[in-house]
Length: 179
Image 1 (cartoon, helix red, strand yellow):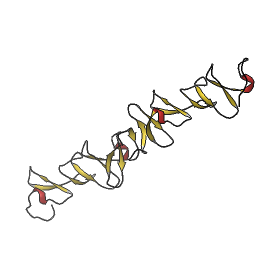
Image 2 (cartoon, helix red, strand yellow; image 1 turned 90 degrees about the vertical axis):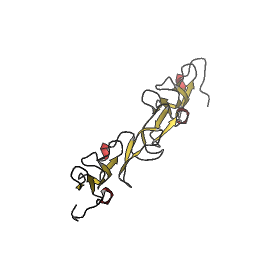
Image 3 (cartoon, one colour; image 1 turned 60 degrees about the vertical axis):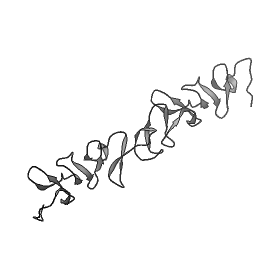
Image 4 (cartoon, helix red, strand yellow; image 1 turned 30 degrees about the horizontal axis):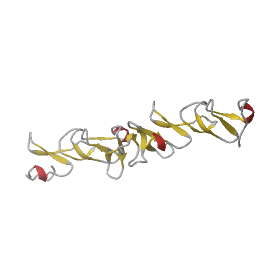
């Protein structure tokens, strides 16, 4: 340290750490604001636009935070995502980018919801855990494609035999368009 004083390890300035090998207060790595050891893996807090990753004790740029965390500006940490999120870009239930387990990503709200809570014009898509858009002819649907409609948009009519939404002239011959 620059003070030329003898101190115990807890008396080292905040931007240094007690280096036992030569009994000095050694400088923290340049990415660290404070540290408890030397090198890039000895950080306790970070400078400027870097974020503290508590898994590695390193200060990383925002893209270096682990995927289940996000760069939290208020305290320069890689903060945990909400428990419903697999990945996130912000805290809370509305900061999700993708979802865990049996939850589905609702892109309207950036939330991970249970399948029955997907918006009415979407369906829970298991392959990528998203609330995926229904076919354009469907108002509501059970899965992808024009044969998965549960109700219809605009001037279309629901054909219960095929689960399709058809224009009135395409109704099966033994039926009629019912308004």
